[in-house]
Image (cartoon, rainbow, N blue to C red; front, side, top):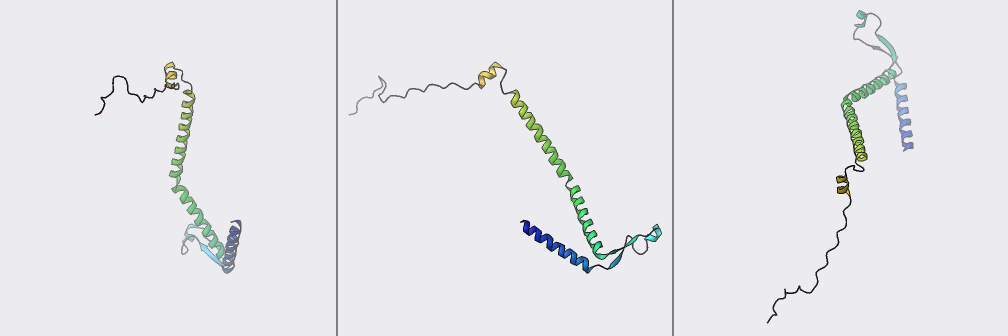
Length: 139
C-alpha cells in the first residue's frame, strides 16, 4: 500500500510539473473588470505566471469546500457531543447506583435479596396404588 501511495504521489508531481512548464507565460490577474479598479484608487491587478494562478485557484477552491463542509456539519458535531455527554452522565449515574445499592441497608431488602434455600424434592409416587383405591378385577 505504501508503494502504491508513493507511485501516486510521483505521478501527481509529474503532472503538476508538466502543467507548470506548459503554462509559464505571465498573465495579468485583475480583481475588477474593465478598469473599474481605477475608480477605487490603487492598482487592482497583479502579473503572475499562469500555472501559479491555476494552483492558487485550486487551493482556494479546496479551502472553500473544506470550510463549507465544516460549517454544514456543525450541527452533527454538536449533536454527537451532546449524546456523548449524556452517555457519560448516564454511565456515571449507573456506577453511582451500583455503588449505593451494592449492600442494601434495609433488613427487608436484605432478606428479599438473599438467595432462596433449596426446596427438598417430593418423593416419587410408588408404582403400587394407594390402599383402598383398587379397582375391581376384570372379567
